[in-house]
Image (cartoon, rainbow, N blue to C red; front, side):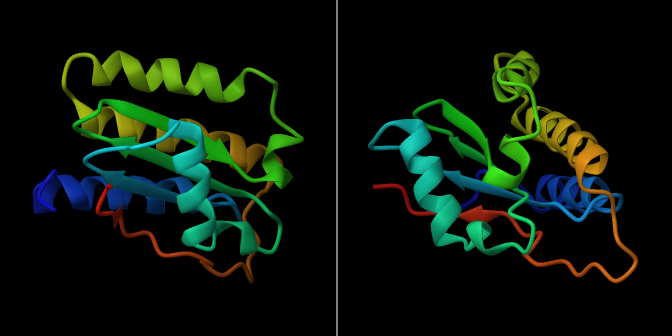
Length: 144
């Protein structure tokens, strides 16, 4: 899937690595062209498919985008959700949307990654023995 060129993919991956440097939280980005169901249901499906619910502290965050259908969601696992404000994810989406509406998907994703990383750091600081539990690569899905 060629939604992003190599440089853009590296920029997103670097933003994930930067966000995770100061937290034990785990962040993934999942991209597909189309989303044939409710966007939150689709994000939750991939959250589980990618094994994000298996992190030790249940502190995973998934940023999901369906580029052709222009849908996106950002969701967190229960360990984080019980700590952030009720409207945290909606506020994060608004900050991302400010970039998406001008066609800058990469900057929107990087913005979401930074915000998620900052909050994860606050609630789940990095531990010296902490392992990277999940891949930092973008998960490209088929979309059906």
